[in-house]
Image (cartoon, rainbow, N blue to C red; front, side):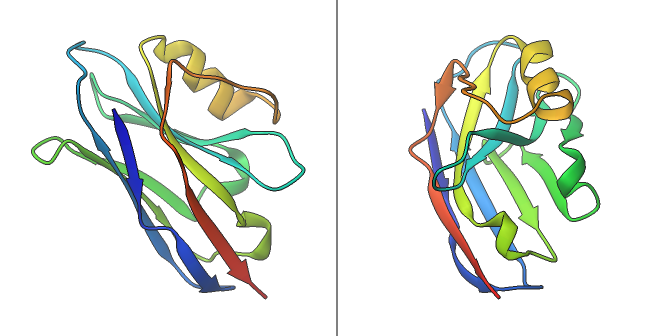
Length: 130
């Protein structure tokens, strides 16, 4: 299961931290990622972390502003978002997939699309006002 928290309303230039509590996974290697979808737009991968080695991957548009991390003791993955802009407004969903290469490719190298991972959380809304 994936349970997100931390969304909300923030002004442009502000920061938010999203959290994803992860439970029920027994694999040694899988990826946890954050995807987002704005109204009327396709879904895009924002960032992901590979559990086996904590390697991280980002979409170009968020590099330097967003940071994904994992607290294994709390089974929680965080997405720290800084210098937010109205273009970051979307519903952010926590995802998981045992095909780590696929998620990394979607996050780092792919355009927005009808992407589906093995597991998706319900999402948390982020609204950035100008």
